[in-house]
Length: 184
View 1 (cartoon, one colour):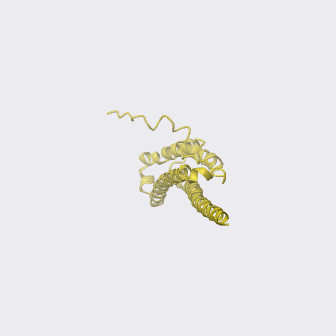
View 2 (cartoon, helix red, strand yellow):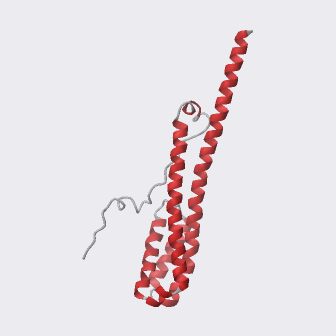
View 3 (cartoon, helix red, strand yellow):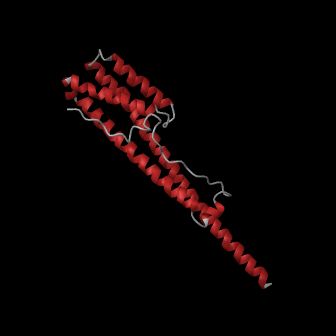
């Protein structure tokens, strides 16, 4: 009789332990999913700013149609594609070229709508970077959670797999570690 009670107590303790581990891992996984959703929301915000920015520039720099068309095409590819496909980096490069037009058109630089959109774009870029850092932190906590003892004993059986860190776009790989050249 005492043997059955001990077995029952051990089973209850193991069940409580597994339930606790499961709930903790679910919470960590949801944090990762939220991080991905936050990045997507910020990328959508950037995509939504592009048409307004192009419209503002178009009035001042109508003969810069190649630049404007490149920005619109990059925006459409980025909006339809995978955030890690390189399309987002191409959009960033196209936006940099668009923003550089303000140097050639002082009246554009003085336009309050352009200044506001430029500020919103810079703010959105900062939010994207922050969301990527938050996602990587969440992925680190999640992966540590499934690798830690005793969770490692049950994580695989409960369907928890490693999450991938946010990585650079394909077009960014190899460029971020290069020192920029400055010419005088």
